[in-house]
Amino acid sequence: MNLLPDWAEPVLRYMLEVGLRGTLQIAAISLAGSLLIGVTLGTLLTIRFLPSRALIRFYIEVWRGLPILVTLFLVFFVLPVINSRLEFDALISASIALTLWGSAQVAEATRGAVQSIPKEQHEAASALGFGWVGRHAFVILPQALRRLLPPLVSLLVNIIQNSTIAQVIGAPELLESAERQVERLAAPPPIGIGEVKAFPIYATVMVIFFLISFPLTRLSAYLERRLA
Amino acid sequence: MNLAVAFDWSFITENGDELLAGLRRTLQVSAIAIAGAFVIGLVLGAARAHRVPVVSQAAAVYVEIIRNTPILVQIFFLFFGLPQIGIILEPFTVAWLAVTIWGGAFNTENFRAGFEAVPHRFREAGFALGFGRLTTFLNVTLPIGGRIALPSSINTYISVVKNTSLMYVISYPELTTTALNINALTLQTIETFTTLAVTYLVIVWTMSASIRVVERHLALPEDAR
Image (cartoon, rainbow over all chains, first blue to last red; front, top):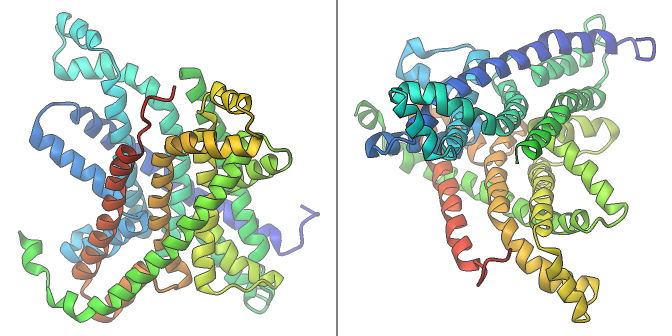
Protein backbone atom coordinates (compact mmCIF):
# COMPACT_ATOMS: atom_id res chain seq x y z
CA MET A 1 0.00 0.00 0.00
CA ASN A 2 3.04 2.29 0.31
CA LEU A 3 3.08 2.65 -3.46
CA LEU A 4 -0.22 4.52 -3.27
CA PRO A 5 -0.66 8.15 -2.21
CA ASP A 6 -2.16 8.73 1.24
CA TRP A 7 -5.63 9.57 -0.01
CA ALA A 8 -5.98 6.35 -2.04
CA GLU A 9 -6.17 3.72 0.69
CA PRO A 10 -9.42 4.84 2.42
CA VAL A 11 -10.98 5.51 -1.00
CA LEU A 12 -10.17 2.03 -2.26
CA ARG A 13 -11.31 0.43 0.96
CA TYR A 14 -14.65 2.30 0.84
CA MET A 15 -15.14 1.33 -2.82
CA LEU A 16 -14.51 -2.33 -2.09
CA GLU A 17 -16.33 -2.58 1.24
CA VAL A 18 -19.39 -0.48 0.42
CA GLY A 19 -19.40 -0.24 -3.38
CA LEU A 20 -18.34 -3.67 -4.56
CA ARG A 21 -20.46 -5.24 -1.83
CA GLY A 22 -23.56 -3.38 -3.08
CA THR A 23 -22.79 -4.29 -6.69
CA LEU A 24 -22.50 -7.96 -5.77
CA GLN A 25 -25.71 -7.79 -3.72
CA ILE A 26 -27.66 -6.32 -6.62
CA ALA A 27 -26.10 -8.84 -9.00
CA ALA A 28 -26.90 -11.81 -6.74
CA ILE A 29 -30.55 -10.83 -6.23
CA SER A 30 -31.01 -10.03 -9.92
CA LEU A 31 -29.38 -13.24 -11.10
CA ALA A 32 -31.51 -15.38 -8.77
CA GLY A 33 -34.68 -13.53 -9.75
CA SER A 34 -33.88 -13.64 -13.47
CA LEU A 35 -33.23 -17.38 -13.35
CA LEU A 36 -36.35 -18.21 -11.37
CA ILE A 37 -38.75 -16.10 -13.45
CA GLY A 38 -36.93 -16.54 -16.76
CA VAL A 39 -36.68 -20.35 -16.70
CA THR A 40 -40.34 -20.62 -15.64
CA LEU A 41 -41.63 -18.23 -18.31
CA GLY A 42 -39.35 -19.69 -20.98
CA THR A 43 -40.59 -23.21 -20.28
CA LEU A 44 -44.23 -22.09 -20.24
CA LEU A 45 -43.60 -20.34 -23.57
CA THR A 46 -43.10 -23.75 -25.21
CA ILE A 47 -46.74 -24.70 -24.44
CA ARG A 48 -48.90 -24.21 -27.51
CA PHE A 49 -51.61 -22.14 -25.79
CA LEU A 50 -52.04 -18.82 -27.55
CA PRO A 51 -53.13 -16.48 -24.69
CA SER A 52 -50.30 -17.53 -22.34
CA ARG A 53 -47.76 -17.35 -25.16
CA ALA A 54 -48.94 -13.88 -26.19
CA LEU A 55 -48.72 -12.69 -22.60
CA ILE A 56 -45.19 -14.04 -22.03
CA ARG A 57 -44.07 -12.73 -25.44
CA PHE A 58 -45.33 -9.28 -24.46
CA TYR A 59 -43.45 -9.48 -21.14
CA ILE A 60 -40.23 -10.45 -22.94
CA GLU A 61 -40.49 -7.81 -25.66
CA VAL A 62 -41.31 -4.99 -23.23
CA TRP A 63 -38.50 -5.60 -20.74
CA ARG A 64 -35.99 -6.44 -23.45
CA GLY A 65 -37.04 -3.41 -25.49
CA LEU A 66 -36.89 -0.73 -22.80
CA PRO A 67 -33.59 0.86 -21.81
CA ILE A 68 -32.87 -0.57 -18.35
CA LEU A 69 -32.62 2.98 -17.02
CA VAL A 70 -36.23 3.61 -18.08
CA THR A 71 -37.30 0.34 -16.43
CA LEU A 72 -35.52 1.51 -13.29
CA PHE A 73 -37.45 4.80 -13.34
CA LEU A 74 -40.71 2.88 -13.82
CA VAL A 75 -39.91 0.82 -10.71
CA PHE A 76 -38.48 3.66 -8.62
CA PHE A 77 -40.81 6.54 -9.52
CA VAL A 78 -44.01 5.07 -11.00
CA LEU A 79 -44.73 2.05 -8.75
CA PRO A 80 -44.99 4.17 -5.55
CA VAL A 81 -47.51 6.45 -7.30
CA ILE A 82 -49.69 3.48 -8.25
CA ASN A 83 -49.58 2.05 -4.75
CA SER A 84 -47.65 3.41 -1.77
CA ARG A 85 -46.82 -0.12 -0.65
CA LEU A 86 -44.79 -0.54 -3.85
CA GLU A 87 -42.10 1.84 -2.65
CA PHE A 88 -38.67 0.19 -2.48
CA ASP A 89 -35.25 1.49 -1.52
CA ALA A 90 -32.71 2.20 -4.27
CA LEU A 91 -30.86 -1.11 -4.04
CA ILE A 92 -34.04 -3.21 -4.22
CA SER A 93 -35.48 -1.05 -7.01
CA ALA A 94 -32.35 -1.61 -9.10
CA SER A 95 -32.54 -5.35 -8.40
CA ILE A 96 -36.18 -5.43 -9.52
CA ALA A 97 -35.41 -3.51 -12.72
CA LEU A 98 -32.48 -5.79 -13.54
CA THR A 99 -34.61 -8.86 -12.76
CA LEU A 100 -37.32 -7.71 -15.19
CA TRP A 101 -34.69 -7.24 -17.91
CA GLY A 102 -32.70 -10.37 -17.02
CA SER A 103 -35.74 -12.64 -16.77
CA ALA A 104 -36.79 -11.57 -20.27
CA GLN A 105 -33.34 -12.57 -21.56
CA VAL A 106 -33.41 -15.88 -19.69
CA ALA A 107 -36.96 -16.66 -20.85
CA GLU A 108 -35.98 -16.23 -24.49
CA ALA A 109 -32.84 -18.37 -24.06
CA THR A 110 -34.74 -21.04 -22.11
CA ARG A 111 -37.40 -21.32 -24.81
CA GLY A 112 -34.70 -22.04 -27.37
CA ALA A 113 -32.90 -24.51 -25.11
CA VAL A 114 -36.09 -26.40 -24.20
CA GLN A 115 -37.16 -26.62 -27.83
CA SER A 116 -33.75 -27.96 -28.80
CA ILE A 117 -34.32 -31.09 -26.68
CA PRO A 118 -35.47 -33.87 -29.03
CA LYS A 119 -39.10 -34.98 -28.98
CA GLU A 120 -38.07 -38.51 -27.98
CA GLN A 121 -36.99 -37.23 -24.56
CA HIS A 122 -40.53 -35.95 -23.95
CA GLU A 123 -42.04 -39.21 -25.16
CA ALA A 124 -39.70 -41.37 -23.08
CA ALA A 125 -40.46 -39.32 -19.96
CA SER A 126 -44.20 -39.55 -20.63
CA ALA A 127 -43.88 -43.31 -21.11
CA LEU A 128 -42.29 -43.50 -17.65
CA GLY A 129 -45.40 -41.87 -16.23
CA PHE A 130 -44.15 -38.29 -15.75
CA GLY A 131 -46.76 -35.54 -16.05
CA TRP A 132 -45.98 -32.18 -17.72
CA VAL A 133 -44.38 -30.70 -14.60
CA GLY A 134 -42.34 -33.80 -13.72
CA ARG A 135 -41.30 -34.28 -17.33
CA HIS A 136 -39.90 -30.75 -17.54
CA ALA A 137 -38.47 -30.53 -14.02
CA PHE A 138 -36.64 -33.87 -14.05
CA VAL A 139 -35.95 -34.67 -17.70
CA ILE A 140 -36.10 -31.70 -20.06
CA LEU A 141 -34.80 -28.76 -18.01
CA PRO A 142 -31.71 -30.56 -16.63
CA GLN A 143 -30.66 -31.22 -20.22
CA ALA A 144 -31.66 -27.74 -21.43
CA LEU A 145 -29.68 -26.14 -18.60
CA ARG A 146 -26.44 -27.48 -20.09
CA ARG A 147 -27.11 -25.54 -23.27
CA LEU A 148 -28.14 -22.52 -21.23
CA LEU A 149 -24.86 -22.32 -19.35
CA PRO A 150 -22.85 -20.09 -21.78
CA PRO A 151 -25.66 -17.50 -22.20
CA LEU A 152 -26.21 -17.51 -18.44
CA VAL A 153 -22.56 -16.63 -17.79
CA SER A 154 -22.86 -13.79 -20.33
CA LEU A 155 -26.03 -12.70 -18.55
CA LEU A 156 -24.16 -12.55 -15.25
CA VAL A 157 -21.54 -10.29 -16.85
CA ASN A 158 -24.28 -8.05 -18.24
CA ILE A 159 -26.11 -7.93 -14.91
CA ILE A 160 -22.92 -6.95 -13.06
CA GLN A 161 -22.15 -4.24 -15.63
CA ASN A 162 -25.73 -2.97 -15.81
CA SER A 163 -25.99 -2.80 -12.01
CA THR A 164 -24.14 0.52 -12.35
CA ILE A 165 -27.43 2.16 -13.39
CA ALA A 166 -28.34 1.91 -9.68
CA GLN A 167 -25.92 4.84 -9.28
CA VAL A 168 -28.50 7.09 -10.94
CA ILE A 169 -30.90 6.65 -8.01
CA GLY A 170 -28.10 6.70 -5.43
CA ALA A 171 -27.92 3.01 -4.49
CA PRO A 172 -24.63 2.17 -2.79
CA GLU A 173 -22.86 0.25 -5.56
CA LEU A 174 -19.35 0.52 -6.99
CA LEU A 175 -19.82 3.53 -9.28
CA GLU A 176 -21.82 5.41 -6.63
CA SER A 177 -19.17 4.70 -3.99
CA ALA A 178 -16.53 6.04 -6.40
CA GLU A 179 -18.58 9.18 -7.06
CA ARG A 180 -19.02 9.80 -3.32
CA GLN A 181 -15.27 9.51 -2.83
CA VAL A 182 -14.53 11.91 -5.70
CA GLU A 183 -16.85 14.44 -4.08
CA ARG A 184 -15.44 13.86 -0.60
CA LEU A 185 -11.83 14.33 -1.77
CA ALA A 186 -12.79 17.57 -3.52
CA ALA A 187 -13.88 19.02 -0.18
CA PRO A 188 -11.28 20.99 1.84
CA PRO A 189 -9.44 19.15 4.63
CA PRO A 190 -10.08 17.53 7.07
CA ILE A 191 -12.97 15.95 5.12
CA GLY A 192 -11.16 15.74 1.80
CA ILE A 193 -7.93 16.97 0.30
CA GLY A 194 -9.38 19.79 -1.76
CA GLU A 195 -8.38 18.11 -5.01
CA VAL A 196 -10.32 16.44 -7.80
CA LYS A 197 -9.21 12.83 -8.22
CA ALA A 198 -11.88 11.80 -10.71
CA PHE A 199 -9.46 10.41 -13.30
CA PRO A 200 -7.66 7.78 -11.20
CA ILE A 201 -10.82 6.86 -9.28
CA TYR A 202 -13.04 6.24 -12.32
CA ALA A 203 -10.12 4.47 -14.01
CA THR A 204 -9.97 2.20 -10.94
CA VAL A 205 -13.70 1.49 -11.26
CA MET A 206 -13.10 0.43 -14.87
CA VAL A 207 -10.21 -1.82 -13.79
CA ILE A 208 -12.30 -3.51 -11.07
CA PHE A 209 -15.16 -4.18 -13.48
CA PHE A 210 -12.69 -5.46 -16.06
CA LEU A 211 -11.11 -7.85 -13.55
CA ILE A 212 -14.56 -9.28 -12.78
CA SER A 213 -15.93 -9.36 -16.33
CA PHE A 214 -12.96 -10.54 -18.36
CA PRO A 215 -12.56 -14.01 -16.76
CA LEU A 216 -16.34 -14.50 -17.00
CA THR A 217 -16.53 -13.60 -20.71
CA ARG A 218 -13.60 -16.00 -21.33
CA LEU A 219 -15.46 -18.69 -19.37
CA SER A 220 -18.62 -18.09 -21.40
CA ALA A 221 -16.68 -18.36 -24.67
CA TYR A 222 -14.94 -21.52 -23.44
CA LEU A 223 -18.23 -23.16 -22.43
CA GLU A 224 -19.76 -22.24 -25.75
CA ARG A 225 -16.88 -23.87 -27.66
CA ARG A 226 -16.99 -26.97 -25.48
CA LEU A 227 -20.73 -27.46 -25.84
CA ALA A 228 -20.76 -26.75 -29.56
CA MET B 1 -58.54 -0.08 -16.70
CA ASN B 2 -57.65 2.17 -13.84
CA LEU B 3 -54.47 3.41 -15.49
CA ALA B 4 -56.18 4.50 -18.69
CA VAL B 5 -58.58 6.65 -16.69
CA ALA B 6 -55.74 8.16 -14.69
CA PHE B 7 -53.81 9.11 -17.81
CA ASP B 8 -54.20 12.82 -18.41
CA TRP B 9 -54.04 13.24 -22.20
CA SER B 10 -53.44 16.98 -21.98
CA PHE B 11 -49.96 15.98 -20.81
CA ILE B 12 -49.11 15.13 -24.41
CA THR B 13 -50.38 18.40 -25.89
CA GLU B 14 -48.74 20.48 -23.16
CA ASN B 15 -45.32 18.78 -23.21
CA GLY B 16 -45.29 17.37 -26.72
CA ASP B 17 -42.94 19.98 -28.20
CA GLU B 18 -40.35 19.56 -25.49
CA LEU B 19 -40.53 15.75 -25.69
CA LEU B 20 -40.17 15.90 -29.47
CA ALA B 21 -37.06 18.08 -29.07
CA GLY B 22 -35.67 15.42 -26.72
CA LEU B 23 -36.58 12.65 -29.12
CA ARG B 24 -34.86 14.53 -31.93
CA ARG B 25 -31.64 14.70 -29.89
CA THR B 26 -31.90 10.99 -29.05
CA LEU B 27 -32.28 10.15 -32.74
CA GLN B 28 -29.51 12.56 -33.73
CA VAL B 29 -27.00 11.11 -31.26
CA SER B 30 -28.10 7.59 -32.26
CA ALA B 31 -27.66 8.33 -35.95
CA ILE B 32 -24.11 9.66 -35.46
CA ALA B 33 -23.23 6.71 -33.25
CA ILE B 34 -24.73 4.12 -35.60
CA ALA B 35 -22.81 5.57 -38.57
CA GLY B 36 -19.62 5.69 -36.49
CA ALA B 37 -20.10 2.18 -35.12
CA PHE B 38 -20.71 0.92 -38.67
CA VAL B 39 -17.42 2.36 -39.94
CA ILE B 40 -15.41 1.23 -36.87
CA GLY B 41 -16.97 -2.24 -37.01
CA LEU B 42 -16.34 -2.62 -40.72
CA VAL B 43 -12.69 -1.53 -40.63
CA LEU B 44 -11.64 -3.16 -37.37
CA GLY B 45 -13.78 -6.25 -38.01
CA ALA B 46 -11.97 -6.72 -41.35
CA ALA B 47 -8.61 -6.15 -39.65
CA ARG B 48 -9.47 -8.76 -37.00
CA ALA B 49 -10.79 -11.32 -39.47
CA HIS B 50 -7.77 -10.98 -41.76
CA ARG B 51 -5.29 -10.71 -38.87
CA VAL B 52 -3.77 -7.45 -40.10
CA PRO B 53 -0.67 -7.11 -37.90
CA VAL B 54 -0.73 -4.50 -35.09
CA VAL B 55 -4.21 -3.20 -36.07
CA SER B 56 -5.74 -6.56 -35.22
CA GLN B 57 -4.12 -6.74 -31.78
CA ALA B 58 -4.94 -3.10 -31.01
CA ALA B 59 -8.55 -3.72 -32.04
CA ALA B 60 -8.72 -6.79 -29.79
CA VAL B 61 -7.55 -4.73 -26.78
CA TYR B 62 -10.09 -1.99 -27.60
CA VAL B 63 -12.92 -4.52 -27.91
CA GLU B 64 -12.07 -6.30 -24.64
CA ILE B 65 -11.77 -3.06 -22.66
CA ILE B 66 -15.10 -1.72 -23.88
CA ARG B 67 -17.00 -5.00 -23.63
CA ASN B 68 -15.74 -5.77 -20.13
CA THR B 69 -16.48 -2.42 -18.50
CA PRO B 70 -19.94 -0.87 -17.98
CA ILE B 71 -20.82 1.86 -20.49
CA LEU B 72 -22.04 4.05 -17.63
CA VAL B 73 -18.53 3.98 -16.12
CA GLN B 74 -17.11 4.83 -19.56
CA ILE B 75 -19.42 7.85 -19.69
CA PHE B 76 -18.34 8.90 -16.19
CA PHE B 77 -14.72 8.51 -17.21
CA LEU B 78 -15.14 10.63 -20.35
CA PHE B 79 -17.22 13.35 -18.72
CA PHE B 80 -15.94 13.54 -15.12
CA GLY B 81 -12.53 11.84 -15.36
CA LEU B 82 -10.93 13.39 -18.43
CA PRO B 83 -11.31 17.06 -17.37
CA GLN B 84 -8.81 16.34 -14.58
CA ILE B 85 -6.12 15.80 -17.22
CA GLY B 86 -7.26 18.83 -19.19
CA ILE B 87 -9.61 17.22 -21.69
CA ILE B 88 -12.96 18.94 -21.31
CA LEU B 89 -15.75 17.62 -23.52
CA GLU B 90 -19.22 19.06 -24.10
CA PRO B 91 -22.18 16.90 -23.00
CA PHE B 92 -23.16 16.51 -26.67
CA THR B 93 -19.64 15.34 -27.57
CA VAL B 94 -19.59 12.80 -24.74
CA ALA B 95 -23.10 11.69 -25.73
CA TRP B 96 -22.25 10.66 -29.27
CA LEU B 97 -18.65 9.71 -28.55
CA ALA B 98 -19.50 7.30 -25.71
CA VAL B 99 -22.11 5.34 -27.67
CA THR B 100 -19.95 5.38 -30.82
CA ILE B 101 -16.97 3.89 -28.99
CA TRP B 102 -19.25 1.35 -27.30
CA GLY B 103 -21.14 0.41 -30.47
CA GLY B 104 -17.91 0.27 -32.47
CA ALA B 105 -16.45 -2.35 -30.12
CA PHE B 106 -19.49 -4.60 -30.31
CA ASN B 107 -19.77 -4.08 -34.06
CA THR B 108 -16.11 -5.06 -34.54
CA GLU B 109 -17.03 -8.44 -33.09
CA ASN B 110 -20.19 -8.67 -35.25
CA PHE B 111 -18.29 -7.98 -38.46
CA ARG B 112 -15.32 -10.14 -37.47
CA ALA B 113 -17.66 -13.09 -36.95
CA GLY B 114 -19.43 -12.32 -40.23
CA PHE B 115 -16.22 -12.10 -42.26
CA GLU B 116 -14.79 -15.21 -40.63
CA ALA B 117 -17.94 -17.11 -41.57
CA VAL B 118 -17.21 -16.60 -45.27
CA PRO B 119 -15.74 -19.90 -46.53
CA HIS B 120 -12.06 -19.81 -47.51
CA ARG B 121 -12.75 -21.29 -50.94
CA PHE B 122 -14.72 -18.15 -51.84
CA ARG B 123 -11.65 -16.00 -51.24
CA GLU B 124 -9.43 -18.48 -53.00
CA ALA B 125 -11.74 -18.29 -55.98
CA GLY B 126 -11.32 -14.51 -55.90
CA PHE B 127 -7.53 -14.81 -55.87
CA ALA B 128 -7.66 -17.40 -58.68
CA LEU B 129 -9.57 -14.88 -60.78
CA GLY B 130 -6.66 -12.47 -60.32
CA PHE B 131 -8.27 -10.21 -57.67
CA GLY B 132 -5.93 -8.59 -55.18
CA ARG B 133 -6.50 -8.79 -51.43
CA LEU B 134 -8.51 -5.56 -51.23
CA THR B 135 -10.56 -6.31 -54.35
CA THR B 136 -11.32 -9.79 -53.03
CA PHE B 137 -12.44 -8.30 -49.73
CA LEU B 138 -14.68 -5.70 -51.40
CA ASN B 139 -16.21 -8.08 -53.94
CA VAL B 140 -16.34 -11.38 -52.07
CA THR B 141 -15.87 -11.19 -48.29
CA LEU B 142 -17.76 -7.94 -47.71
CA PRO B 143 -20.98 -8.72 -49.61
CA ILE B 144 -21.28 -12.20 -48.08
CA GLY B 145 -19.83 -11.59 -44.61
CA GLY B 146 -21.63 -8.25 -44.30
CA ARG B 147 -24.95 -9.99 -44.80
CA ILE B 148 -24.10 -12.60 -42.18
CA ALA B 149 -23.16 -9.82 -39.74
CA LEU B 150 -26.23 -7.71 -40.45
CA PRO B 151 -28.75 -9.06 -37.89
CA SER B 152 -26.28 -8.93 -34.99
CA SER B 153 -25.07 -5.47 -36.02
CA ILE B 154 -28.65 -4.15 -36.08
CA ASN B 155 -29.03 -5.56 -32.57
CA THR B 156 -25.98 -3.52 -31.58
CA TYR B 157 -27.57 -0.40 -33.13
CA ILE B 158 -30.72 -1.06 -31.09
CA SER B 159 -28.57 -1.21 -27.94
CA VAL B 160 -26.88 2.03 -29.04
CA VAL B 161 -30.26 3.78 -29.15
CA LYS B 162 -31.21 2.38 -25.74
CA ASN B 163 -27.85 3.40 -24.27
CA THR B 164 -28.34 7.04 -25.28
CA SER B 165 -30.77 7.16 -22.32
CA LEU B 166 -27.70 6.97 -20.04
CA MET B 167 -26.78 10.51 -21.12
CA TYR B 168 -29.17 11.48 -18.34
CA VAL B 169 -26.16 11.29 -15.98
CA ILE B 170 -24.38 14.09 -17.88
CA SER B 171 -27.63 16.10 -18.24
CA TYR B 172 -27.57 16.00 -22.02
CA PRO B 173 -31.22 16.82 -22.84
CA GLU B 174 -32.11 13.75 -24.89
CA LEU B 175 -35.45 11.98 -24.46
CA THR B 176 -34.92 10.48 -20.98
CA THR B 177 -33.39 13.64 -19.48
CA THR B 178 -36.19 15.71 -21.00
CA ALA B 179 -38.82 13.38 -19.53
CA LEU B 180 -37.28 13.59 -16.06
CA ASN B 181 -37.14 17.39 -16.26
CA ILE B 182 -40.81 17.48 -17.25
CA ASN B 183 -41.65 15.09 -14.41
CA ALA B 184 -39.86 17.33 -11.92
CA LEU B 185 -42.01 20.29 -13.02
CA THR B 186 -45.40 18.67 -13.60
CA LEU B 187 -45.24 15.72 -11.15
CA GLN B 188 -47.34 13.84 -13.71
CA THR B 189 -45.27 10.74 -13.05
CA ILE B 190 -47.52 8.14 -14.68
CA GLU B 191 -48.00 10.23 -17.83
CA THR B 192 -44.31 11.07 -18.12
CA PHE B 193 -42.93 7.59 -17.79
CA THR B 194 -45.67 5.88 -19.80
CA THR B 195 -44.96 8.27 -22.67
CA LEU B 196 -41.22 7.73 -22.27
CA ALA B 197 -41.51 3.93 -22.22
CA VAL B 198 -43.92 3.77 -25.17
CA THR B 199 -41.65 6.02 -27.25
CA TYR B 200 -38.62 3.79 -26.68
CA LEU B 201 -40.64 0.65 -27.37
CA VAL B 202 -41.89 2.07 -30.68
CA ILE B 203 -38.30 2.87 -31.77
CA VAL B 204 -36.84 -0.44 -30.58
CA TRP B 205 -39.67 -2.61 -31.92
CA THR B 206 -39.51 -0.85 -35.29
CA MET B 207 -35.78 -1.50 -35.49
CA SER B 208 -36.25 -5.15 -34.47
CA ALA B 209 -38.87 -5.60 -37.16
CA SER B 210 -36.48 -4.07 -39.68
CA ILE B 211 -34.04 -6.93 -39.04
CA ARG B 212 -36.55 -9.37 -40.54
CA VAL B 213 -37.31 -7.12 -43.51
CA VAL B 214 -33.65 -6.41 -44.27
CA GLU B 215 -32.74 -10.08 -43.88
CA ARG B 216 -35.36 -11.06 -46.43
CA HIS B 217 -34.26 -8.32 -48.85
CA LEU B 218 -30.58 -9.14 -48.63
CA ALA B 219 -30.90 -12.93 -48.49
CA LEU B 220 -28.28 -14.60 -50.67
CA PRO B 221 -29.59 -16.19 -53.88
CA GLU B 222 -28.33 -19.50 -52.59
CA ASP B 223 -27.20 -20.57 -49.17
CA ALA B 224 -23.56 -19.48 -48.96
CA ARG B 225 -22.17 -22.41 -47.00
